[in-house]
Length: 360
Image 1 (tube, rainbow, N blue to C red):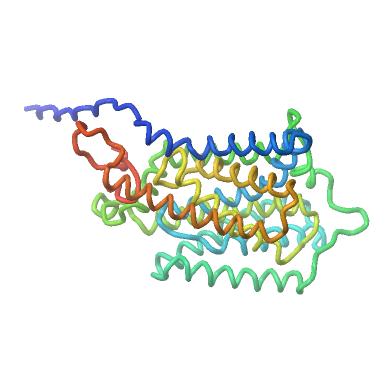
Image 2 (cartoon, rainbow, N blue to C red):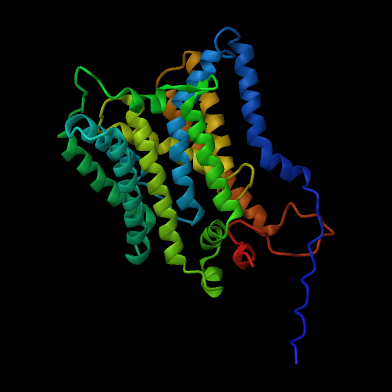
């Protein structure tokens, strides 16, 4: 006797995105265009030029990569404050292996990326299995990484010899492809890969469920600890890549340079959660946020603003990003963007998504 067929789940009716949802999703992208247009009108001789575009793509590639590294733990509801320290450790380790240990540069890069991955996994284990808040845990591991960085460099800088670094290594950052800086292609490739993983693969769906509703994740059988460790591991992998790029860019080992990238990375990750997919961290939103910051800082710099305007800009943007992210999350919980005649249903994503994010 055959079993009766399973009942078919009625498909959800197609609903057009309301105007408010369009503004929330693409407002940051429109702001980027508006800022670019404004600075182009105010600074017509210096801002809308190919030199400015090259400067944007060269100088903002590493902040963009590190912002993507910060995004992944945020998806799981955690924060990795060690990414700045990890960036500093990774880049001085590359320089140490190439300059002082005479390693071939491909092996040095592979070892550093693998080491960053291992450090990320260690962060996840400390947070989840040690039951330590992610702020405290990653701040502690970051401080230890900073100590290792000082031990490697002995408090000084690692300077290449008279022959410099291998040209193939520095070309990782200094070269161009199709007339554009190569680092821009790294950022696009990494952003697209991360978007595919988070938005199109079961792994990404599980990470979103763990971050939005750990209890629901436990109820449907998702091992929350394991997937949180996966998130930190991916973050460490990306930090290792950023460290290699920073070494190729700086061409000198500076033990304190990594901390300068910590605040921009989190501003980009948090502000990015208000774009494209408002209310949830996402890779494309992070890239849009980095573009807003890059255009704003470049325009401010060309206007001749004082040096202290940069931390003021980042700090104010961070407060705005956190406020907007909280507003988007509350709006998703209350369904403020849903049409009045739409049937009640849980939001497909966000802080209270629950088991609806789990793929069948």
